[in-house]
Amino acid sequence: GEDVEQSLFLSVREGDSSVINCTYTDSSSTYLYWYKQEPGAGLQLLTYIFSNMDMKQDQRLTVLLNKKDKHLSLRIADTQTGDSAIYFCAETFTGGGNKLTFGTGTQLKVEL
Amino acid sequence: GAVVSQHPSWVICKSGTSVKIECRSLDFQATTMFWYRQFPKQSLMLMATSNEGSKATYEQGVEKDKFLINHASLTLSTLTVTSAHPEDSSFYICSARDTGTPRGEQFFGPGTRLTVL
Image 1 (tube, rainbow over the protein chains, first blue to last red):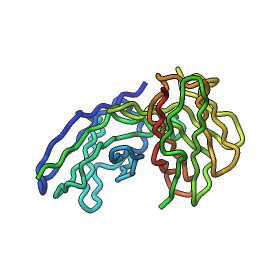
Image 2: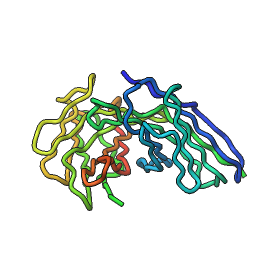
Image 3: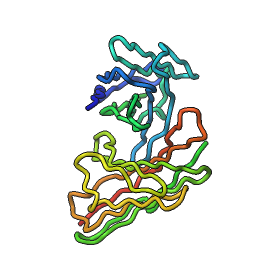
Image 4: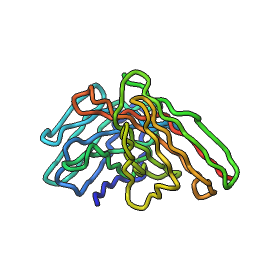
């Protein structure tokens, strides 16, 4: 099956940039997503990138995709305390029937 | 944006009872909904794909007789945990696929916390 790995924890200071990384094994990805989950809540879609793109910027969020290395990252500029949450990368893939495969999740803690 | 609701948001039940969780798409029709399970500090694991008007497709290792899924309308899917036991305690999250979006995007419900005593 597909494996999607993330580092477990990231701590940054308010105002700094955060970079959350994700590696995946499936080479037939179609779309790759970043979701945010706050405690006890569902998932909020932050952004996505099509698998033939290298970069996408959306306000404070920048997504970089290195398809050769199967590496996806999410950069949050000017990180705020409200950004503290768990972040999941996810992918859909050819033949997957729109099923999402989620990464292991990265807990981001923003400190003052 | 599209809104998906779940009911109840939390439930505590005794071992051996059955619990029904509802997932509704509030402002769009969803022919496909997904049910996930999430253990504390872990990722979401897909349990099954719920298709309106037909049988659900279960992921490997998920007991279909234990987790009954009904998708009787374009806006409602239900998950019934039958004869629940403490090991079924988990956070259950549904999503609904909006075919009106270019990517058939999934929108997630807020989750249901199930605790089985």
